[in-house]
Image: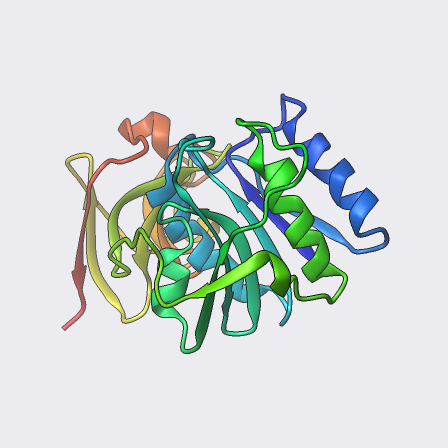
Length: 242
């Protein structure tokens, strides 16, 4: 299984081009559109989203992860195995939270370059062929050199900011819901806790631990982003329960 995790969006041809390349190189291997609305150019937010979402996939899943504003520059490219999952993408911090939280990690620098390589589309030309090889069950060792560490590493602790706003207007944070939370405050507002949307009245705001294990700010049948003016990068104050 190959899971796509990108900031490409779905209006443009990029996702289709990547999937066409995967279909040619790994026919019959399932390709899952995990997320194509990672905040644009934001490897930091993407790193926390990827770390939250990847554990829900079966062992040996391959994540083709591309949030790559430095594409075409000398920034590194990397293949990683972490706790039984494979990851292919730029070495710009995007894979670093997964790496830091994993019990077992192996890393390789991608040294291979295809005969045709667009300076602006390594997702299709460089990363997709490697993801396809892994999806076929083949390790492309002749295209790699082992390395001891990633070149760019973000702090793997909780990120107390809004890292994603979904189409409902729910604001995901980079704060994990375990251990227990005592209080949550954002945009000058203290949010009450509820386990689900129906536990509060229509139009009421609350926080909950979402299905990816992250603290999320929401409004029942409304938009937390619109109601409270929440946006990507906003700080969120979280107190742990004593």
